[in-house]
Length: 66
Image (cartoon, rainbow, N blue to C red):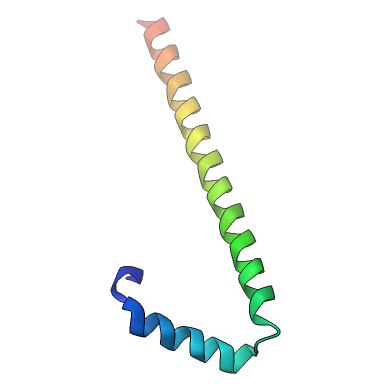
């Protein structure tokens, strides 16, 4: 979905954001969005690593039973 925006669409979104929020709020919004995205990525990585460790533990238990 995001891949289909293109340069003109991106410029349009930025102009609309500039009109709505103004030039003083835009950097604050960008910083908040970046920190939220970073936190989401870290949480996703933690969930994936937890799933992998659980799968390894279950696999080890299954081998020990047989």
